[in-house]
Image 1: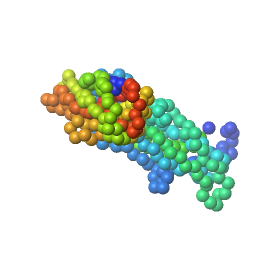
Image 2 (image 1 turned 60 degrees about the vertical axis):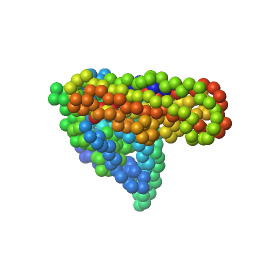
Image 3 (image 1 turned 90 degrees about the vertical axis):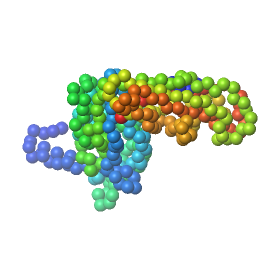
Image 4 (image 1 turned 180 degrees about the vertical axis):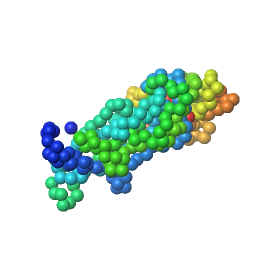
Length: 330
């Protein structure tokens, strides 16, 4: 739920055919994390994830943290240059019922049926079999997600899997070498995914945070010029208890750390903090919002929208920025 709150020729002879296939059993490409040399990176759901049965198909119900993996890929044997691909769902498993998984890469969402994705990276040719093949190093920024999709299982259990290999890095052949041979990304604890009867209603109060006129005086970069309070009010109408995480995503403006700078006036920036203790709320990262458990059917969380000076010589004039609030169920 979202709400705005800011301004790769076969012959018919058996023996030659066997000889042709034997080299294919060897890997052409191996990828590991740089430095550590890890072949598996894991994301843990951490706890149960509640999925409202009435959410529209395609709604994201869980997202991993954003990662930027430092990767190193090289050929395992002599040969020409080898393109590096992301192979989605290499084990060809159904992740569960009523859900599907996906990968976000460079801002684009790819669902588990999307097949192979080029990384635009290439391992160099390998000439000398007596020494290690040269490698290509690059960063792979991504996150993975789970969506509600398809009929809800009558049992309410979304997945019987404990682990799900979301993707692996491999070469153009597309042969799955297994999770221990080349870099794979695995989601753990899928048994924690469960369906609940309803979703939560979210209200932003007020929907527009108006700072009014802000006087340019006593300007010091990084200091708070003024602030306005707003609240996120949540409620449920069914008996299913759940907890809620939220994520604040900029729609307009330029993000600089935990400050959102309006495009039409970069003299100031907006920071969101928890009203209870003043701690910053990071943009783009999920945080615990509230618990709607047992007899608790509604809850309100208070926040501050703070204006921070970005320059010692601010420019007078209007400013505006907009964000969206996503809810994630637990």
